[in-house]
Image: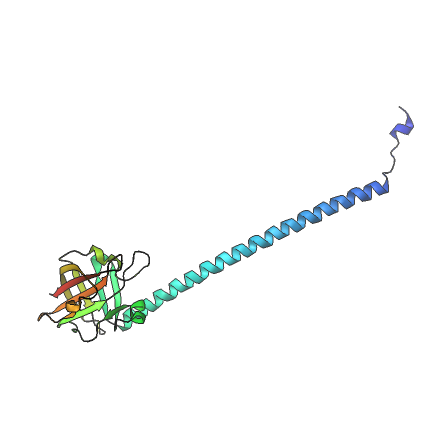
Length: 196
């Protein structure tokens, strides 16, 4: 073999610098792309967690408010339907957005026709959503502020037009009347329970 063939020649410095520069440029471009994707992904994760956190906090706060209302106010409970709701005075929108509402001027606990209203909806979690599944003979339990218990037996379940307010009248007995919207919201479901 020829000695010249085996002789190693140092690489051309210009070619090495050019090759090194190209590698550095590719690496920098790839690194910028990776960082951009990483930052974008991180922002998406933080935004998603923030949104979930807001909804989670809101749900926890609503549950806290519900429990507080139940401790401080009368409560209606229908165990078979998993209904348990605080009762506030009045039936305006603000009241019904927080609890069931007692119609002012109607009966009292265990006397007269104690009438309450509450929302039900197929879309939202409302207190009386399950009321459509009520059956005659079920027990309705009413607790006053001092948590004294009044038990009623469901004796009637029917639908009326919103203008039919006769259901709020005193019928000479001791009953509870629960009023909520039908699924389409155009009529009212009325559930009557007589005091045991």
